[in-house]
Image 1 (cartoon, rainbow, N blue to C red):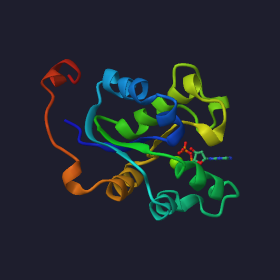
Image 2: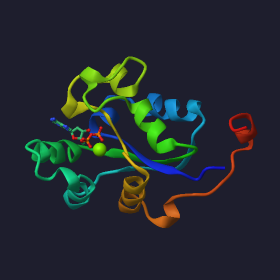
Image 3: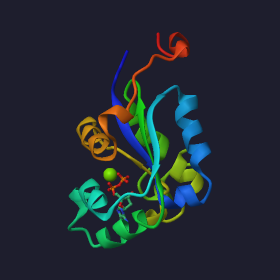
Image 4: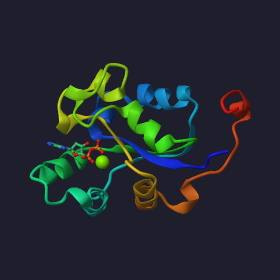
Length: 151
Ligand code: DAT
Ligand code: MG
């Protein structure tokens, strides 16, 4: 059984727009396992670290301001290839390029309001999960339906 994990977040616009349940549903219905979840107001320092790779980009101040504008739903999802498949479920960074059927393709228009975040590699997932969650906030369990999801 894969224990690969990814950090998925519903950004302030997604929370305000009532998109929590449809976004969670897509990960649940795919067969991934939710192992951590909290509604949280991230601090500026957490966001600056989370987006540390982008700090020289011209859009960085606006990105941090947007992410500070309300609560974020932070989650950890687990499963086989969940990092890569999670990004497929989210769709392209710019919703204009995101195909219908993806979260950003269905629910977003502007890149600066793209409703969700997903880790881009197993290493960044580890870093992000460590940043947003305490160890005891991420749980371990085996769903009884897993024999119907994994061969
Ligand atoms: P992703 O969120 O798909 O991993 P990223 O890590 O390159 O994309 O960028 C993080 C966020 O920054 C992205 O979700 C939205 C914002 N962003 C990225 N490129 C941008 C741009 N060219 N203009 C404005 N915002 C941008
Ligand atoms: Mg990214």
